[in-house]
Image 1 (cartoon, rainbow, N blue to C red):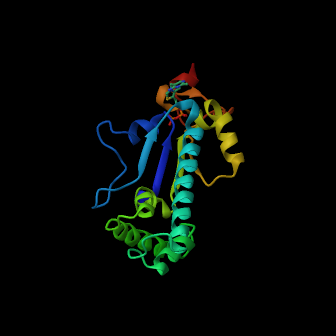
Image 2 (spheres, rainbow, N blue to C red):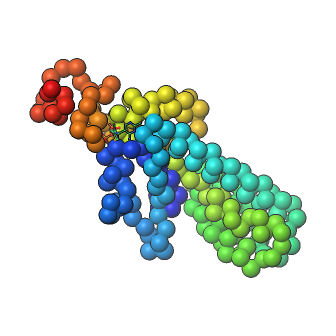
Image 3 (spheres, protein in one colour):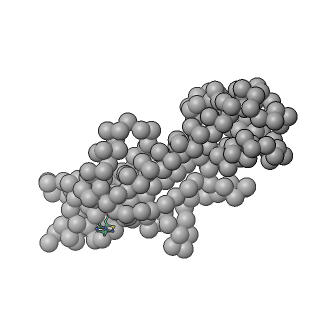
Length: 199
Ligand SMILES: Cc1ncc(C[n+]2csc(CCOP(=O)(O)OP(=O)(O)O)c2C)c(N)n1
């Protein structure tokens, strides 16, 4: 997924091994770009990821608005070919077969924008990379998803916005020693339960 991915990580084990203490599991490509990762709070992670979704969608909407003006001929015109702009405008989803075209067209578009000095291109330059769709992943443990962050998660899911949610369900609050969450089974554990549950 490379540099198209945004990860909102709830506090917990995944934010410890997902952070930079002292290494990070999120790799970069040869050009130095990779996923964007951030940790806010245990209690607001779904909302945090939702904000990422809203922001990248807004940037894309703005970029498409500018591309539309360029197609109508409002730009100096010399820089970006119209069929390239149309290809960028028409590719909307990463699952769309046109998304590879979109990524290529968007890259080419950005390269060409660099040599243009007109006002429209100046506005498009900082947001052109958002023409390629972004994937937002909201990640955390069951303590976050089932308990502390549930109210926000519930609203974010109900919003229908395009976010992925990954719950690393260890059936306890692992990072703080194994306190029970709503995901902890009522029945006996098949293997040794964490200390906090034995008490
Ligand atoms: C509001 C708040 N309460 C408590 C904590 C302390 N805390 C940090 S991680 C964590 C447990 C996380 O458990 P879970 O979400 O199940 O993730 P896991 O560690 O199992 O991956 C707790 C209670 C906190 N960071 N913020």
